Length: 402
Ligand SMILES: Cc1cc2nc3c(=O)[nH]c(=O)nc-3n(C[C@H](O)[C@H](O)[C@H](O)COP(=O)(O)OP(=O)(O)OC[C@H]3O[C@@H](n4cnc5c(N)ncnc54)[C@H](O)[C@@H]3O)c2cc1C
Image (cartoon, rainbow, N blue to C red; front, side, top):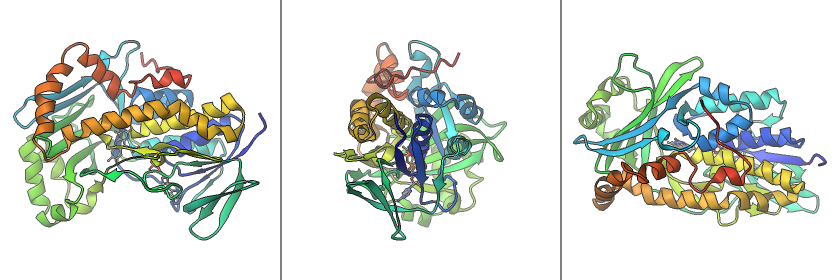
């Protein structure tokens, strides 16, 4: 296959992974990002067996594992101590599996280092604002009125607020506050669990171990559910009252929230549910959050981004023609994306909502069902990102962690 010229806008998990895979496939890739210097923001996320299948094929498993925490179980309890979520990776048939809690920065660093080692050009400070098509190919336009191209293919990996596609979808009524804290060495938390506490679905506090981040030591992410329009009210109420709310729901978190002395230590994340109706266009494909976004309740976004990136490379391998890539990549991923968008839309209100029925359904129907076969297995497959069998369709297989 002759090398084509490919532009990737956005250096999140989707963009960096696509750059690595397409460079390995012999393409000439240029990455663009709006950040002035490479550097990620955000806190923890979960890498699932689905996403790890791609990390493994990139040869980056050991680097990722050394910077993350092995998560065997997701455990959620109500304020009264009732188990409302208990999902275990060992319910998955086949090779032993687990999730990985990792700081977003650690994942970025592993992928970014691999991009640098592969010598892939990355142009920072380049904020894409649109793209145009002419007979020579597709061009990227930037905020400073410059442009780059022509490219045989442009990959939009600019995330939720992509400027390369029309707006779509809706903001979700709940988001969350997130912060990263040192792991309390003698604390009550388990390194192998993502744990949450709920009051109905109005309040939720969670602790996600994120392993060792170079230069920072062992860490965790603490998150607190918040209505999307509740940030100003939260600031007004003050940290003392928030600390009280958190510890009233989960007393063991007292030593964590005491470390937060300034609201600026806490980041608000707003969630959206959206899916582009036309992710494949002439020499342009949208991947990752630029294509589809959902609340992180099922912990899939970064994993979906990795699978999308793999699909782009797989589409190129199968077709041998960059012009065929958008439609084929979307075809390879469309079913799994639609399935998880629907599943996330169903499950999110069970964990974040002001209404009474969703938590009732969660506590009285779904939680008991998930404790028995086949509920246990269905739940494990869903959180692992494997419902709908996305790997087989992409020529990938599950990483054997044993
Ligand atoms: C609070 C929270 C918790 C989450 N937890 C999980 C989890 O547990 N598991 C999971 O899998 N996912 C989780 N996610 C989702 C996950 O973070 C995203 O799905 C994932 O980061 C998407 O990757 P991406 O590469 O598509 O986009 P992004 O990570 O958003 O990267 C986009 C990149 O594009 C760049 N960019 C943006 N605009 C422009 C522009 N105009 N021009 C050039 N560059 C631009 C940005 O600087 C960035 O580098 C969570 C998300 C949130 C908010």
